[in-house]
Image (cartoon, rainbow, N blue to C red; front, side, top):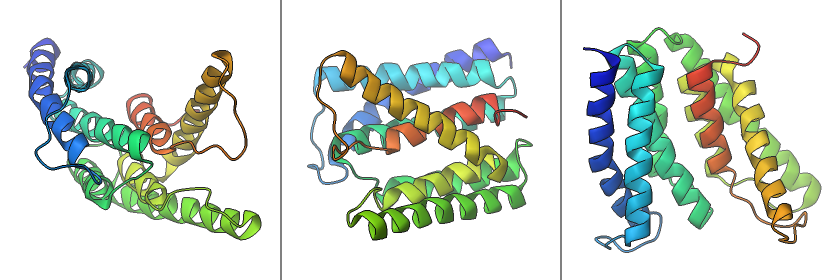
Length: 215
């Protein structure tokens, strides 16, 4: 099966998946089950999921790798939307991402299962310790409870060697967000809340597609 055909299939699947994600994004973390998404939310999720499916096929010529890459993109899309809107990363989203990362390690040659386990452990420990140190030094929360689990899931996908790249991309995304706010004249202060989940999601996606920076 050629990448073009796989891309058409995954792009078409993304149209269906996007509609499902639009509904799920309203039900989690504390929305109303069965709520109908508005036209803008529905259009965004459908188009984004279709684009991620097609992108996965272009980036991964092997059909199985393309399918798993599309699955990664769809999961990260939902995680980014939920955290961006609610400042929350439910275990119902991050733990399945961790599981699919282990599945990808077992089925593909991007990373070994041992590297995936090490990446998950290092990702969780690194952010958890950072959050703990920040809380002790500043007396307030600096990261959400779900961020260490999300980075653990990212480590399962990209392995321990990809974690620095994930954090570098995530930091660049966060700084870009702050710069965009400044450009449009929005006041920015050190106490402003900013969801880190979308930044981590971008870092995981780019590291999975491009590989660890410098390697």
